[in-house]
Length: 582
Image (cartoon, rainbow, N blue to C red; front, side, top):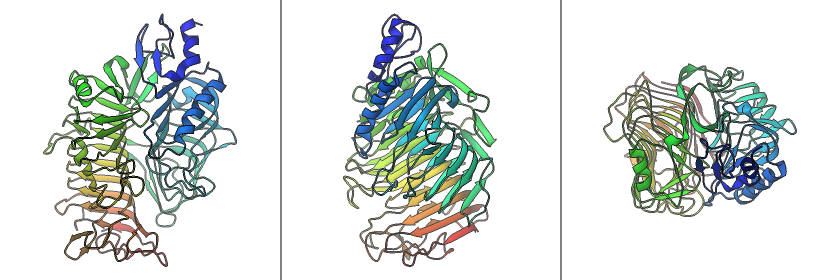
């Protein structure tokens, strides 16, 4: 074994990566002999030859910071080179655990990979912003605990045992699973809602309010409304999220999965996920505190792809993604924060752009939008090579005062949204009706836009405003704002209390959505919402499987969709369900 590689195994937590065959001491494989990849201090690259106790010490050090770090500035990525590991891996806030193999089975962890409830009494309803991707797990006691809520990605995973989505039956508030194989049972337990896309398991047990299965061959038996299962046999069009990979020669790259149509099940039955690998020399590796919008834009203009390493990027201008097929990939919840009232990122109206693995955090000066996909007035067709937005999350307030008009605006046709949480904070710092202001979570102006796993909460007007035709949503979860001080402040029009959570614009003639749950938690008396969903009365605007729930002890949602469904009230709790509309 070469001296450089031995030194790398002993010091890999420092974050710098050198070539395994190079002439300098390093921390694991690089992109070629003598080359250097600098992922920065917040990325740890682990080798199976490294002593287990040293790996464990580094994992524990990260978790000591991130276990209760809901609004902290720290960001971490834990990268595992192909091989066998025996460790306890708790995944805390702003932590991404990532296997670097072509298949999830290339990296195998025996032990305890888990997410624990972030609040007391086994309550996981604030267990946000973390991820496990691209490795296999043999749980020490046979069952893997994944007690999570919003903004938690579980992708390209293989659980060699059972899995539970809660902690000792404490509450949990929704999550995401895709391209994942579970050899045993998935027990959803007290999970309020969940989406599984293109995943497989031996069995699934449990239900609560809204469980959606898209492209899942072994979807559980039963039909809406009891149990509340929504099952769509095939995923119409999707591209799995790109991922970092290391080949047998020690070269890093980013695997970009192929676009799939009418698919079911996982991508990696044959080993590697079909697609292409982009070598790392075609990426610009950005560092928070070092790079600016100016330095990043200069590299993007040259045709580079972009890898954003963990950290908070305070931006005085927007990052502009202009070239077709550009991949923008964040590690460890890399966070983009505009500080001068601009957008954080914009894209051109061109084919094949992928934006993945990022957290957008609004700044104190109001931004018109945080992420704009295509400029206003975009008209091009991207049906053959759509723009994709994957594991991209948004926050207004919580870590401090934040302000935005809209969070995510999609102007480009055929865009695919694959898992997002768009959140105006209901707790934390800088939170108040006049403090963390945000009119809309998602605005869709493009045609034929498809969304899987759409979580949008607490914005002050429409949570979702869909102006484009031909839109499709598979799973929607939304809490309307907690904090309207009175009905006058929360009225969208004459005779209409509040703003519908999901609004399809009046002139839209085609739209379809499956599996929607909309909830109220009003904190002030005498505030109600007339309807959760507001759509044109057109036979080609179709909604399937909807539920409303009024939580806490105040207010109501008077109708589920338009004037149908009846009222959700808190005492005694009535939870209306509508199977189809019209």
